[in-house]
Every structure is written in C-alpha cells, then in structure tokens.
Amino acid sequence: MALDPRKAALALHRFGFGPKLGSTSGSIAAIASDPQGAVLAELEAPKAGQIVNPNLPTSAAEARTVFDFFYARQAQMALERRRREAAQAAAAENPGATNAMAMEDKPAEAAQPAQPNQVLPPRKIFLDEAGARIRAAANADIGFVERLVWFWSNHFCVSADDTAMAGAYEREAIRPHVLGRFADMLQAAEGHPAMLEYLDNAQSIGPSSDEGIVRNRGLNENLAREILELHTVGVRTVYTQADVTNFAKVITGWTVLPARDNPEHGGEFVFNSRMHEPGDQTLIGKTYPGDGVQQGRSVLADLARHPATARHIATKLARHFIADEPPSALIDRLTFRFFESEGDLKEVAKALVTAPEAWAAERAKIKRPGEWLVATRRAIGRLGNIPAMANQQAQLGEPLWRPAAPKGFSDDNAAWLGGLKLRLQAANAFAQAVAGDFEPRELVDVTLGPLATEETRLAVARAESKVQALTLMLVAPEFQRR
Image (cartoon, rainbow, N blue to C red; front, side):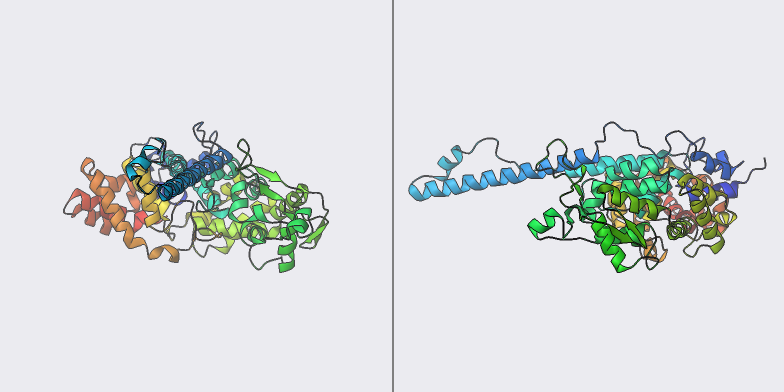
C-alpha cells in the first residue's frame, strides 16, 4: 500500500492528540500506510477508553473523603472556639491569670496550619483524577478514543466547583459507554450523583409528594431542562416549557445519600419515593405511568432514540472534529448512522472516520487548550508535571472539569481565538524546561511532517536559540489546528 504521510499527519492531529515522539505506533511514519485504518483500529482495542487504576476510589468514596475532611476541619474550629470562650470566661473570673497559664491547658492536638507542600484531600483527589486522564491521552497511540471521552465528558459536563466527583464521574458514567450505546451513557450520566448535585436535582421535590407536602418545597427544573436542551433533542426543537416541568416531576426522588448520615454509602445514588411526584406525566406527546424510578428511565430511553437527538449529536460531533460549520452531508451521514444503529456510538465514530468530508485538507478547528497541552508533551515524548499542566490549562481558559455553564466548553473557534497569545507564554515556559534535549528542526518533521509550511520551517531554522525554535513550532498555526 502506498504511503500517505500527509493523511497520516492529518489523522493524528484531527482525530487524536498529535504525533508522539519515539512511538512505534503513534507517529506519522507508523500509520502512513493506512491512516484511516489506524484510527479505526483504536476503536477495537481491548478496554479502549477505560482507566484501570485500583488506586482511584469510587465517586461516592471521594465524596465521603472530602466531606470527612471539611467536617473534621469544622469540628476542629468549633473545638478551638470553645477553648477560646472557656479561656475568656476563666480570665474574667480570675483577672490575675496570665495568658501563659491559659496556654498550658491547650491540648497538643489543636489544629496546626497546613504545611506549605501539603496537598489537602480535595486537591489530591482532583490531581489524581487529572493525572489519570492526562496520562491516558498522552500515552495513547493516536488518541481517538480519548478524544471521544473528552467530547462526551464535555457534552454531559459537570463542574468540580460543585461536586468533588467530577473526575470519577467521567470514569464511571462516560468511559464505560464511550463505544457503547448512547442510551446507556445517558442513563449513567443523568443518574450519577455528580450530575444530580451539579444541576440541583438532588434537592428537587415533587410538590404533591409526601416530602413536598410536609416541607412545603417544590421542583427544581435545572436537570430536566438541560437534558432536553443540551443532552438529547436540542434547544428549540420538539419540547415545550410544560414538557420541562413535567420531566422535572418525573425525576424527582433521583437524589444522593448524604455523607453526613451515611458514613459507608454517602454519595451514592438513591431513589427516594417520598420525594417523587406521584402520578402519570405527559412528555412530548407521550404519557408515562407513575411507576417510580422507572418513569424517568423510560423517558430517557425514548429521548435517546428520538430523531432530534440523533441530529443534535451528529451536528455536535461534526462541529467538534471537522468545522464550526460542518458539511451538511456529513451531518446527514452521522444522523442516519446514529438513528439506524440505535445510538451505537462505536458505529457513529466509524461513520465519522470513514466519511470523505472528515478528511478535508483544510484544518479549520483550533485545538482546545487541553488538547494543545497534551500535544506539546507528545511532541517531545515527555509528560512532565501534572499540577503544572492543570494550572496551565486553567490559565488558557479551559480549567479541567470546570465549565462556566452546563453547556460545557465551546466548540466554536471564536471562543479560543482570544487566548492564543497566552499559548505563546505557555509554550515558551515549556520550551525553557526541555528544549536543550532536542533538535527543534527535527521535531518539526516528527510532529508536523508534510503539514509544516515553509514559513514555519524557516522560522524554526532561523531561531536564535533552541528555546525560541521549539516555542515557534508549538505555536505555529499547523500545530494549533486539527
């Protein structure tokens, strides 16, 4: 088979995280004989998209750890407040007592300030999860399946500002289904404690439920609205505000066991029938009997197979991988495959990779900050410091698992154009740390190959130092686009 290095380079940047220095399977040369086949082969790899790490706890265990940490801190603060009040009372009764005498009674276990290098449990959980995610992307042959994980995690996004489980949520709700059926991922994502906390459904109570009557509290429509607007059929399509309200009633009682009262099972999903709105509900023209938790599952199953969902997902996938305004023929192709395969995401991914429109020579999409940072590390074959990468990703406008809104991070180029100048600083800092070990002109061939323009090659060749040369390569338009 004839070699096609240009198509190989395109495949690595468009569908993966860029070429990996020193790799026998993730380089331009390694896949040049069959670039499309190499991308498709990743879909068939054993445990594709999974992270097997026994040191990473479940989401519920993470939630309990964080709760225990803050609760212990709260208890310590309360204990010290009582000690101060007792000391003040004793001083008032015995004005001659000295401060030193009061300090003699202070137990040794009083809270000490955090040490400068101490990583507190919430931060450690985040960094452990971030490290697992980044290493999976950096070590992948091409990275297509990891890119799909990132896409779906952003589609069904949660925020680490609202839940300690963001990383574990991705492992538990997204990764197991990334090459499975959309219906299964939908059920897993919407019923996950992280989602229920993020979009406030854990506190949503049916107005006519026992809990609603006793506590005089009612619905929260956030999750129901976002499922319809963002996760399935799409905004301004087949549903009305009445459908949103009825759907919110359907999923009342989908909540989370509080860690305060459940030291062994806190943070886990639970269906609380006392919070669930009783009775049948009608949604998008269909009536669903009031049969508890199954009522919500039935609605989600129907939304997963709705034609509007197929088109909404197809459009988002095409926009993410190909262009802000993707070809209508590609959207139609993906819509048909999604609907025909009943939401088989592996089949949809295959349809994307085999579509002729997906191999257009124009590289119209700007890599998002997280993708670009991983690509820079793959370019030199070193991962480096995970906390530093997480900090850089936040500085570049895409803080990991912290989207500004439930719609996730934008897939439009306009959202990232303003931050491109910040990448120059990030690339320069990275180059200063590693450039001495590499010959940048050789890296251009390894990382960009035939995609490199003459302008970029000349800029790298004429650079005053290796640091400047590597910086110029990493911020070149060819490197920043996919």
